[in-house]
Length: 309
Length: 178
Image 1 (tube, rainbow over the protein chains, first blue to last red):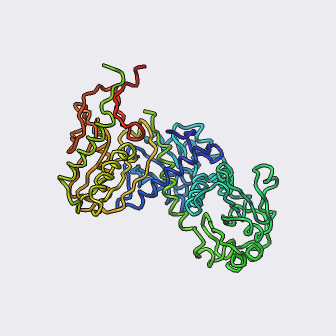
Image 2: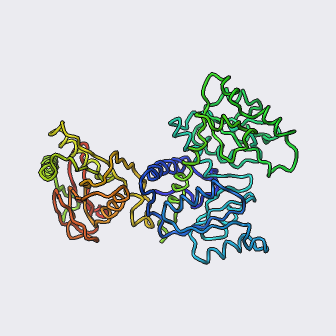
Image 3: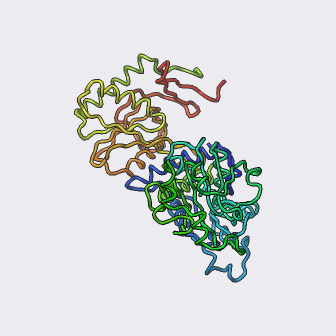
């Protein structure tokens, strides 16, 4: 058994069968995480570096935990406080780290395509932990895992991705993955935050009215308004965004069904999601975080340099 | 040697599995501190048979039975990745007598991995090993069965396969021969 790819750069490169294998393996790792000893020796001869050129809480901790639960050795690298500020290039930094015998690189970078560049030039396994506005594949996988766990399937499930689609790598990975697994996908939000031609390019529905999106979907994956990626005014104020596109308890209660609420975090409470929605019983936000460790264990386990020695 | 020989036919297989079950009954009755654990994936048909047989003989007793997947504990992960199966241990193995059940004992590496996987779930009082076919003289680790269905001599290129569904049998064959 093997994935069809050597690296995890994006969901775009995965086959439906790859996704199936990763989700099945993650199910078994989730069981491992319920045991008294939450650790298996699978990767005890593997060294992994976590290269974070951009801030992260959940993803970094989740990857690090996944690596430790697999008994891998880990090194953490944050760009701030490193020689990057002295002008060292990405390739030089990584080659220096690899000369200390590192087998896998988990990388987050604000430049789209940075992990693809590394994969071409260095002999280690690359796992993309988010690159610019392109993809965040492990988030896509853990979202799919959480939906499957909650609803029992992906095929035919209606998922609305709501909010800042334009700047969201989470949206891209989710769209690729859900379409490959036979789910129905809708993107919703203000027209200024939804790229043109989404419908033609990705075969997804586009909706500018959040109420209509919620009426249509089984699952609402609510995205964060990415203030740090916006250098122009795309909506007039956070307050106005909340009134027009935010999800409130009252809005959910006016629907005659229960929509599953997801969010990749960190939440801007009171902007895209109101607090009483984020903390309610129909939100699976913390399950997503829990599942993240199992899914990342599966990815690292399946990509570990097996069969190459 | 023949390329494909039947080590046990359906009748022999059934008799042997029943004998193993009776040996387990002799040593462990009434199973108050004993649990049975089949090793995924190929030990499961064997453990299913044995546990079903004991349960039919003693329907009033609570026979605890679990399944253990050892994929993440294998020492050959660098050579080949395996698809994990389900681990299902719906009870604590703390201070229990655990009987591990597998189909074929060969190098002993699977059992080593199974013991590591088992001990990550608690500290059993004792662990025993029940095996349907023992490929003797081929051990790479100091592991021996406590209950053995049949011991056979085989060469390194040969494989043993146990069929319990359909036409039940155990065969010895050489995959490299036509």
